[in-house]
Length: 104
Image (cartoon, rainbow, N blue to C red; front, side):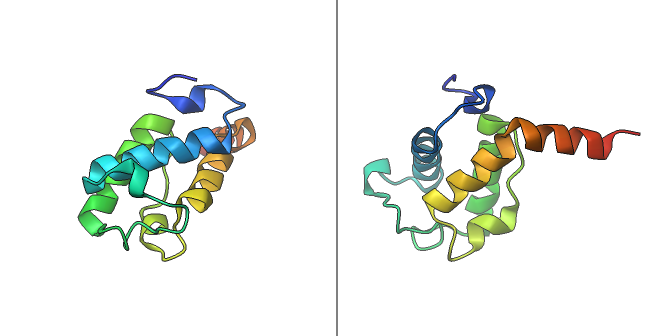
């Protein structure tokens, strides 16, 4: 796993993804990452549609997958939920499905 692209490691753990998401949220929302708990959602921390767009772009850059924009705006969009979504999206099975879906 690299700091820039944690999805390169197939065995990335949820704790690593959660830590990366916590750092991304903190950067985008300009808050201390240590204040973000597993019970916080993006909106309650001060997020809005523009910051969600920035966060989705940073998630794509860091993990190499596209997280649906709407997922950040849900009141259930907490770090553990999003980490599970990202781990599923980063899985080799998910990658092969998306590749075969776009094949001619």
